[in-house]
Length: 74
Image (cartoon, rainbow, N blue to C red):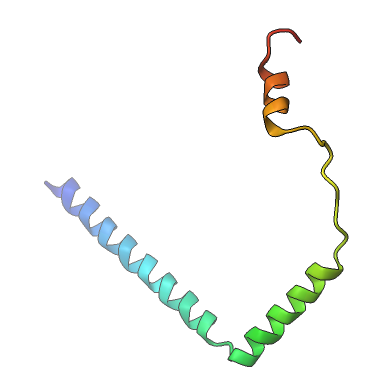
């Protein structure tokens, strides 16, 4: 019986700690003003547009690659 009480108490403490972490991260997230969020999004978008576009290494279809990988006639 004592083991179940300890496990129950540990569960309650775990739920409370998780709730505290969620509240803390929510406060941190809401600390930004809308203008700060908008500026950050514009900055990320500009970086994404200037990043070089890489070509895929293989032009073969996914099915063809899987077929080669798992076929017996290697």
